[in-house]
Structures are given as C-alpha cells and as structure tokens.
Length: 481
Image 1 (tube, helix red, strand yellow):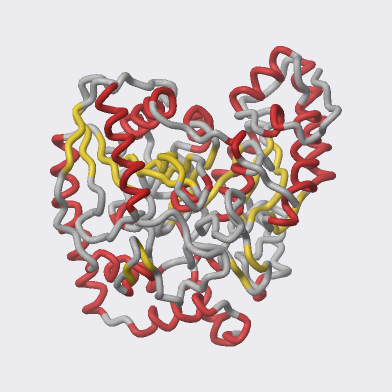
Image 2 (tube, rainbow, N blue to C red):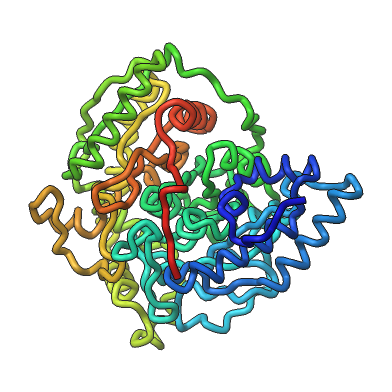
C-alpha cells in the first residue's frame, strides 16, 4: 500500500487510469487510497478553480472501498475503482443535472446515459459532477448558476468549453478520467486549453441519450491525460446500444496502435479562413517536424472553406442544438438565462427554411474537399483553437478579440475554436492532443482527424506524438486554493 502522508501527493493524483489499474493489480495501491488523495486534492485546489458542481465524497469513498474488496477477491472489472468526473449534462439516476442553468437547479433525473452506464458497469466510481456553460452554448465557462470556471494553468483565462470542468479536473489532478459531450468542439476545446486529450468519436461509435441519438452534431466521449486512457475508455464506451438507433455494430480494437513511419499526413494552419495565433501555429509546426522525424510524410494542404462554415454550423445548431430543445422553458424564464443562451435561442427562432437548406449545401461542399483529401492521406492536422484561450470572465457576446495584435472578424470572435467544422463532418474521428505551451502559460492543442470511422489512424498519430514528440508536463503546474 502507498504512503499517504501527503494525501494530495502528485505521484498519486496524476496517475493515469492505466497506471492506477496496474498498481491496484499488483497491490501497491488501493482504490480507496487513490480516491482519498483525489478528494484531498479537490479540497486543496478546487475553491480557486470552480470545476465541480457537486463532489460525491461519501459515495466515492464507499465505491472505492467496494473496489478494494473486488481487487482482493480477484473479481475486479476493467475500470475497477477508477475515479470518473461526469459532466453536468450527463444523466445518472438519482443525480441532479442542471445543464449549468438556474432553470434546472433542482432537476433530479431518473435515467442514466448509456455511455456513462457502461463505465459504471466496468467499475468506474463517480467522484463528482463537472461545470459547463449554460446548456453547453459557449466556448468558455460562466453561468448564472455556478459562476466562473478558471484555467488551472492561468486563472485569468478560461478552460474552454463546454466540457470545462472536465478539462480542469484532469489538468489539476482532481480526477483520473472524465467524460464530456461535443456539439461544436466541447470535448476538444477544453482538452486543448487544459493540456489534455479529448476525443470526438465518429458519430455512431459511442451511444448517446435521447434525443441526442438523432443529432449528428452531438457526441459523447472521453477526456484523459494520456492517449492510452482515451483508448481504454473508448474500449468500454463504444459499440451498438439498443437505445441509440445511430450506433454502429462494429468492434474497434483500441490496442491496435500502428507505427506512423511511411504514413502520409496532411495539415492546415488555418482551415482556409481562420487567423491563427503565432504560438498556436508554431506549436503545430513543431509537431509536424516531429512526425517527419518519425518517418511520416507531412504536407501542407489548402482548403477552400470560409466563414460560410460558421453560418451553416450556427444555423444547424441553433435550430436543433442543446439549448434549442428547452425553448418552452426559456420563453417563461428568459430573465434567468445567461446572455449567450438567450442570444442562441433568438438566432434559432429567426432562421428560415432557406437558411437550413443553404447550411446543408455547405456541409456537402466541405466533405467534398475533406473526404477526397482523406482518401489520399492517412490523417489530417490543424489547430484546435485559433488562440490559446480567452478571458475567464469574457462573455461570448464580446466580439473584441485580438489575434496577433489585430481585431478579428466577428464570426471568428464568436467561434475562435477550429472544431465545429468536424461536427458538421460528424463521422470523422477527431482527437485534440496537446501541442505545446503559450507565453500566457496556457496550453495549446492540435486536432488529429482521420477518415470516416477510422479511429485507430487518429489514435496511432496521437500516440506517436505523445511518445516521441510532445506531451504535457503536469509537474510544471502549480495550483493554489
């Protein structure tokens, strides 16, 4: 068993799930010891970060002690005793799920999301529920209900969104794994801003809850500190589910990581229309050189995409996205909403059939270019965000964003994340991986995009970068209360 003289010792709280499971297996650490260390870490650093809407300390310790017994008895399951932080829009029977909104402050649910159910059945233990912007409708995290969530690397900046608390809890050592949802980048943006990994699986790979099963923009998936942990979580979450008509009946071997030597990889700095921060660009180019050193051919490509992609994504998301589903409540209590939620609803109500027809045509044209490219290349790289992060207190309606000293166009200021095009092309697997640090002390990220449903092309590139080129050093991170 471990020496727990310092309960929040980094050697424990930054263990990957894979490492923790090996220590549970060899008897050098108990799940209850790791859980106690994580809970102590939450007490120590979360007051200054505001990453949890609820911490289930009593229940988590009880679950961890049951896991102790399973390991002793030889009946441990694949995630036995691993701490899981769950996003505040993911239902678990008996839990309060608020979506970050005052309107749902007392909303106790009676069902469990099929993805999280699979992890719980595999032995994961929920440690707490993580913050998100109201209804997931922003790229950083402040809500009338829960306040501001801050980036542990620099608390003046946001952690990205909408799986904001998930990214923070991982980076700050307050959980071992976390889940998220992604309708425009909500797993990948906080992964980038916090220096962790976040996976948007191809739509249909991971089960969703109703009515998200019918929204190809909406993805449920993992965030973790290592590629191996993302693969471990995917091996449990993925697969056909009777409650989700969209799930595909295909088994992926998430251990089948390949050598990228000889691969052809494409990259774009700007996707054809984004102004991109010089440090974000330089960190991407550093990864490009690293992959070339591993024997991959990495070539820059030109995309003909433009801001019509933003218009198409916004129109589609505003008409059927997460906030749009609650309009009947909003009409009654609009004064209780965050400014950005009210703005999204107003935009959705203003749309015409012609707007949605035009949006569909943009989707078709975008895949016409990307689909052909991914026939020629094994993977595609681009930044996750156009700049490292934005101010923690910034309203998404504040359009005065500068990149490289210049005010950017409004459509870039509204969506400074380069993720939403891949929700539009939802069957493409996309993993945000760390690419380096910025001068403001906040991490940057790169998206690894694969051909439709080819998860392991993405994982193989990510693992090669993690092993040989760059990974986040969490020992550099100093977080105080």
